[in-house]
Image (cartoon, rainbow, N blue to C red):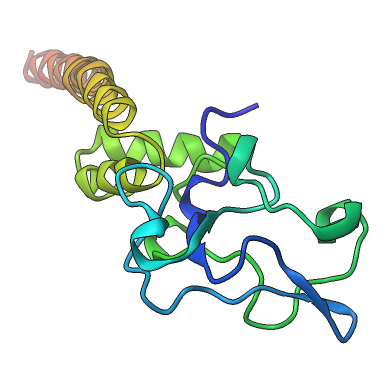
Length: 174
């Protein structure tokens, strides 16, 4: 189980529920929406409704009318262009949907490349203080500590290798 599954799928929709149209679920995105929703950004400002992916937990999980099932539960598929999609292409590989994507997100933050963008996305979609606390603690724990420990191990191995070469060179000179 992950901490924030589906958080990068949260977008404003025009209606509070999808509609079954021609054997598939139709659910249009709000044209006025500018980013992820559910945290700092609120869809009610543009007259929309914030929902995420079917893997979402809580209030932002799509609700289907009359107790019908969604595509992940064996119901009709999404119509083309209506399926929950990630708003930002860089979150296709780094996300909280499963363990592999979360580990890749942690590695990206550990290298300190693009971590602020991910933090801002989570602030927009989840919670300002949760995102700030999570990412700052992540940077402190991984980048400032674990990355330096890993570099120290590599440096120590290089020193051992150089000492071994120098010892072999000295033995050859004798």
